[in-house]
Image 1 (spheres, each protein chain N blue to C red):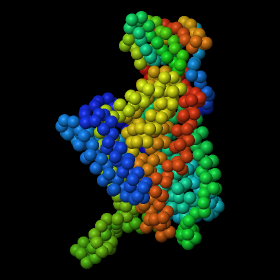
Image 2: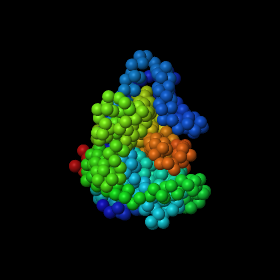
Image 3: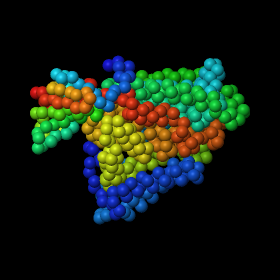
Image 4: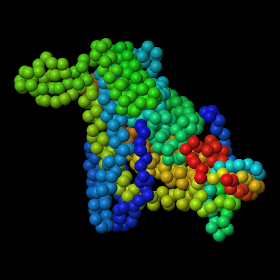
Length: 509
Length: 79
């Protein structure tokens, strides 16, 4: 995901909660949540984010029962976790990206893509691969994989599915693009955390990780073309496709200007809130000036028919009468769609903080690092697998990255592994695993956005929504990054020692 | 730096030349002998003149000798 985050004090350094049954019990809330998520969304196929909130809450309550001594320290850790900047940063990105994407939706950007696909003849075989490239470029430009996922699931996913592309492949391609950007973008918060925690400069880590990212991306691109050509015939009905093609309209492509505004503003070094806000303003102006969507499609106050408000404000802009009072429009819907997920993420980060303060996190890392890192090769393999493992368990990848970073620095320095190399191992596996498993932030945010599509497009049905558990094998770029780093650790590809060059940021005494 | 400069395979046992100056992390220090150690990959250089408080810190050393067969060498602290 996204923006500069403060790394704060070492979160794994202090144990403040003691558990009956040992440090391992501090993992109970998170383990319970993961088991709940697999049971609910994987086995029962219930994709209800609020249901996951119930699971996390129950996990936190059960965990408390195993605390020795006063339970206040447990409660404090929950608050401490929920107030961490990483969680809030993710929520901010979702809310802003949600508003922006929904406003492009009502402005007909998807209809524009439909027109473009027809004109260029791009069909279901190439659409996932092209989606991967464009998502990767957007994520690299704006630095937020979550924001990219939201925008692309809202805009490219329905277009691809309507054209007959495999929905699972489309989702995998979008998530892969998000991984690419999260890993490579200089303004991505995972990139910044990886550089800062490994005594390196952002420019240096981006330049040195290019070789891994581009190798994985080229292989992913080929894989998406091959997979799409082998995918079974789409079950999208002919009428849905016809309807999509009928509504195609080149005017929607005017919103390339809105997306360009976000990308260029972000590249110019502005904060992601500022960049997306400018994009949103441009999108609203385009919608109104070119007649793509009336103002009330973006924001509307619905007042009950026959009420005082209806009589008083009748005819005012952005005021409409309805059966019941409500607020609506893309700005409202786009942001509101992520409120439930935002609450869930805060609770999951609280669960992770319980594991950190209960000592479970440190015990796990100590065991892994002590028992397997005997040579530089095994040390690097351990760095890859531990980073991937921790990120697979913790929903918000930046939080996992910050927690594991001191250990990556420690083990890497033991073998004089260069700061750039350490940062690259840390960030690639952090970015990759944040978008693969059903409980990961990237997949959850995609699923939330996908559900919003039902009802927006007449041809988009519930059957086209991809279950979170179905995505994991198809996030090719994520898996390839992990495999390339395992290959690099074993063969020494790209390895640099501190004796080869010192990363900027490291200092001698 | 060039994006393609580090597209290479690096040995787990890097080698060094006598007289070469390196900036590395001091990875170990033996209080009894007063000798430090800089492990670079799976090669080890004994460092004379180091202090205990320099462990895990970057130091500049000058290589006195290095045996590429044994992957071991000796160096002294500079400055």
